[in-house]
Length: 60
Image (cartoon, rainbow, N blue to C red; front, top):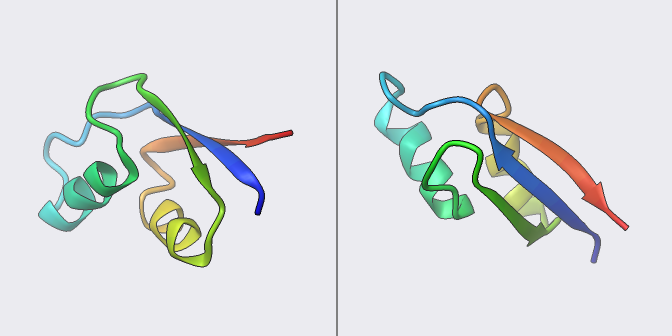
């Protein structure tokens, strides 16, 4: 499976609870935090839901 690098670029303050929990599930706790995750359908769905708060890059 491919890996993606996800970086939080916006705060979760004043966001719905569902988006806050999605960010936590991705492993993002602080601003500018970065995690590498497998690009599974479940992860890609979470990324789609919070794409306005994060930056996504492919890892080669």
